[in-house]
Image (cartoon, rainbow, N blue to C red):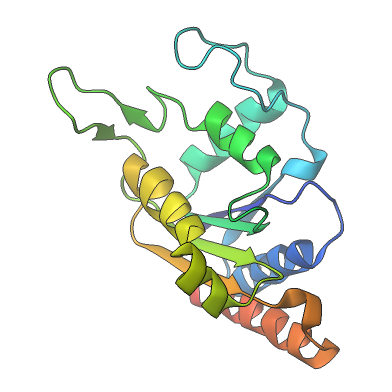
Length: 191
């Protein structure tokens, strides 16, 4: 299986980076091919300056990332929840990469679009300092809905598995290692 792990934290060294690395290691141990898109190391403008009215020139890192997404069978997104959503760098990457004609296509006279990333599956792993129960009850799990439904499924990616690691700020070393082991196991299971 061909897997792309998209690390969406703007810092190069974080618990999310460890999760992404463990998932990749698990997938590699199963014989999968793995590419990593590490947004913290990429050079691209995350601002979609003209909306979809005018195309921006795509930087080499962005072109490579888009080629990698098309190459992959399975996409893995790993990032922290900030302000109930994803970091702006990841949102900017999505805005710049998952464009009309690439990830989806508008259909004249229809409310529904053509999904151009059909056949791909995904795993989304999100961390937060807020407890998972609080995110679900207070914020109605809007970060999950945003990534799973309004972004990935809109482009045809399905199924999308979503995992939320909450209360990270208060987890003990043993609990952190347990999550890293679970991430490795998800990579082995390829989901």
